[in-house]
Amino acid sequence: MKENEAILQTHMKDFGYGYFEKPEQIIPPIAISFYSFHIMVSFGMWFIALFALVLFFILKRDIKNYPLVLYAALWSIPLGYIAAEAGWIVAEVGRQPWAIQDLMPTHIAATHLGGGNVALSFTLFAILFTVLLIAEIKIMLRQIAKGFEGAH
Image (cartoon, rainbow, N blue to C red):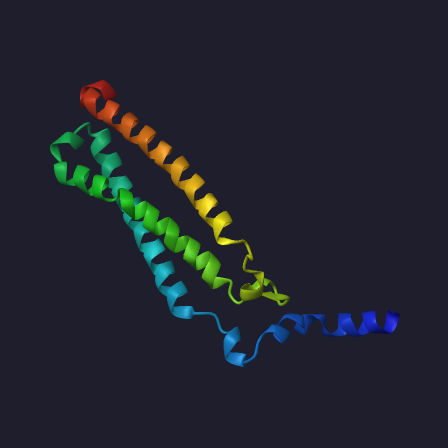
């Protein structure tokens, strides 16, 4: 028994490689991580610049005279979601091929849940996020109705 444990410990660092048929399977998809990272960072820099610009005009109490800045802020809302998804892609694809370093490739770690479980999870999240979206829209519309004078 001790002898088998010693053999296992000696070769443990190579354990996960037994799941691969070809050496090429070890290489993660680099392009998607590369471009996702650049999208995430670019949108992050855009948000920093936009925040600085909006803060400047707010401190001057003059932002309502610059509708292009307000439109840029409005149309930048989806970019935050895109940046978050790009960051998620970097985190998930970038750590390929190991879910557990050198022990388990991600295709082995994938779930074996049935389609019903996945559909139920998706439906519950869709309902939750729809309720949150409705609440957010109501709050934004209430603030818009107050106008700029109500904000000071």
